[in-house]
Length: 541
Image 1 (tube, rainbow, N blue to C red):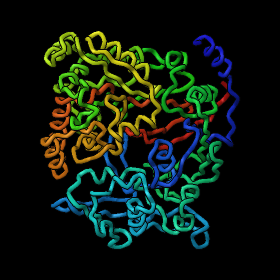
Image 2: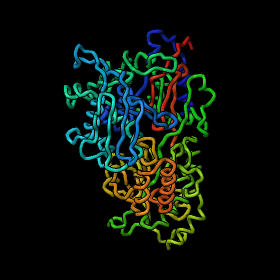
Image 3: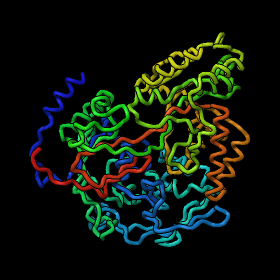
Image 4: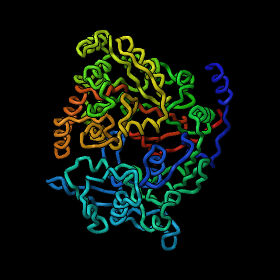
């Protein structure tokens, strides 16, 4: 197979001179085969978020270092009781030109637009998938108020320190009321924002073309208006393997991740790009705020758990110690990601504890000791455990099952469709499941909410509940940063002691770009930034 791929790739290596005409057209692919919507209210999956980020702006923006920086908001203050935020907005931002506006010229963005956009998210009639970010957090009456054109007030029910981080989410993009009301439910097909690019053409499932917004407000450090690109061209090749092959042929400028069929061809086992490809393209590896894990249902009041061994904390701990995460990372992932031995909060997030003082390393002797303590010496008499997993993770879970068996824990791997697995997780019907938790915003609260006892599933898929954890969680929402991060570490430690999850890997972003691409950026939530991308002209290759 690798030999065949090498022949095909060498044939694809010849490239013609790139014309000046298409130099500043950036070509990417959405491998899901479709784009559901460009409406920020429904920016719930990766490609929706990428597109919304190109078309719109938010009050704040999370950079590559997870610092929350000003965007549409120049600055903000919070009251001493933590219940009121005041945001000072820019006064030089305009919506993109659109026929709905007088004369077709985009008008200035004002605080009233932010109020409208945020109220729209929590409007039950809109049914936004992002309503959760404000529901039960903002005040029940008049939560968003435009004091004047450039001053915005947000009122909360209780202190919530990550509010500026929440406001960086694509859900919180600012939209113009006139355009939304003109198109109604079709607004997602007729976007209009303040962002660096604007819609030119959308042939659903085949092609999406965005053009540079000539009136975009943001400048680079030299005072040059952004973006540099003239256009973005999005294709919809469904297969990840076909996508990567198109990239090797020079038909794409960027690929997110790598298909398994190319992994061993292109990467060493350490995750480093092989020499023969380094003159073809670049690999950017960076932190991805994504913890991959096995989850265990822990609500012992459920009938399904009555006779299940996973109701026993010692069994869950034994499973954690029986997994050799380093071996899995090397042999099945080509060194992509880091073994998750330091809790549920991933590296790069304030509150992560790199000391591994409360995590789980590979320790089969400890696993056997815990099994004996639970009344199953060497695993004798321990019922078989079924692990539900989507097919794309089956290789990892099958190896985990082999490792568990070596410690006397019999495990059966059951392949299940991703949407069915999510349904079972939400209904507390999945006892043991393979999943991932990706940060919604750059604060560790998004990982700890996963275990907060007052939350349903999602996010609390394990139905974990602990009074001390819940008390610390509520206290952290009122605490200043340093104390809050200390509470985050204590919560993570407490969770790990009960083992409602077996963290497997802290994931890693793998972005491949053509060698002529410069200025590509992204943040640890995999939100790509194309504002400063340039493409250098190519000669013959």
